[in-house]
Image (cartoon, rainbow, N blue to C red; front, side, top):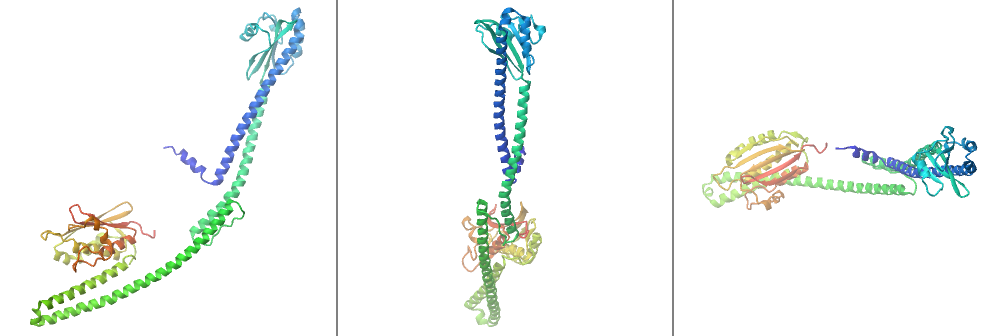
Length: 495
């Protein structure tokens, strides 16, 4: 995978100032390159045309001056004519040719008397209509020819060849000047961009600094940006937003404090109510027990089924009232830690529960199986309550429909990604899918009549689990029955 585009994007978008400076520099380079290229092309075309015009003008002058000497075949006179142009700068050669191609005069005397046979010369000699011609035009040199006319008759040719070294030197000078101007322009543009972006981003940085201070807890921090441009308007709106946010936070804090006080009063009222409800139920149980002992001492009353049934109702309802008050107390305390929230050994907690419920398990003929359990990030009192209410729920509601079948309860779990998952499964009659969410509602019972629990147990479990931002739900077991599954995050909320 190529990380170059990613790194380039990170470099480009690292700051607004960098984007402004690089954008200005890029635009400046493009403009200067376009402008410089245009100027260079114009200069090249101008110098090229100038060199052609100069060469043709010189060839025409030599042709006019040498016409009579060509007719007279006066080599000395022709050499004197060429000698007058031999000192011209950048001249490579000057030739006077006869109409047959013999060199009559040359800036290089050793060539006099020779016949030209190169392709350019043949092109010149084969021309049907004598007229000025450009034989060669490239970056290195220019070669022009001018017919020598006398009395309307062509009697020879003049060829002038100029080198273009001086023109190329001038072009290189122009090019160097263009590059220098481009560098100066880029530097000046970047300085202007730096000044402009510094003014803009400097004030934007003030907003960033204020935002960081607000994040760090300084609610009184405000942006001090003057002016009437967009950044100033943004700063004013930012300060207005902070003022409104501070006002809203004060209102929320006041409402939160009022809600906390109301909740504390409600909790206190619930605790006192539970205490006052627990005491009559306890006395009712004691008086019921005393009444049973007195009735057992009187033979006539002992045989009275109505008296015996009434007494059983009193004792059962007293026990149910006591359990209901206990569960309400557990429900109220379920959302707050009652100890240090840390990794607790769930295996040890379930083992202690098994020992505590050994007699009840034996009386109901139930079998409890324990698989390996991951540590639970929860305070120990609530972890104990969580498993206790789930076990109690299974013992109350999970009795198999077939009396000959043994109640099996299995507790196991595993560590997941960032959480621990636990399962409490039984082989009871199960819960229909449409009721699997309802059973977590407080005082929700699927059974009717006086048998069963208080209808708060699974509500207590959900309240404990959700206080730790976990989840709890009911699934169908592989072989029937119910599987209560709950998940707890592996990290403490305070981390």
